[in-house]
Length: 234
Image (cartoon, rainbow, N blue to C red; front, side):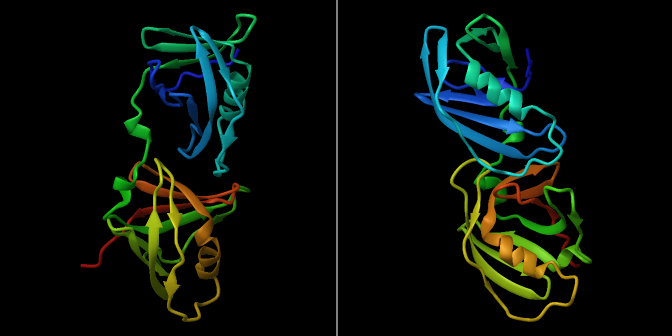
């Protein structure tokens, strides 16, 4: 039995944080406990009394570096669950033989979720890029790589020796997409991260704000950009 004790609002209407059951839709969030990056799993479920069946699940492909091993047993718990019980602030999933697969306790969803309102009006500078193979790239000057999010869905960016503007949108918690960006065309010096960022810009799909830093994740385990609040020159 794998016991997963992670924050969740417990009710038959909404089991939030790691597991959300609403109407006939199930949504799950798998978390790396060493670093807070998110994958989201959506699908269907059927609940009759305590009998539960989860349908086929579709997952995002956000890069989760140095994971704690939670994701695979969580998938297995959903696939094998046959019974769901709620006692007080605790929810438990069991298989058909009565073996407990996973347990959830009540927690605070807001502490670990991100919404579009968190980004509007904020400005960030690049700390580093970390790929799924643990390769880390650090800018020579963080203030050469900046993003400023406007509340109207517009953004202003500096990518090393070039500056530009574009659009952004968030269709759900921790989800983000960037539109095409119009940039100046200066040739940046060797060692610049300019070409990589421009190439990967449209592949960013999710984000989280954790401990005052912004993490932007590429699809298909491509890597994660970490930003800190922009340092303004006096």
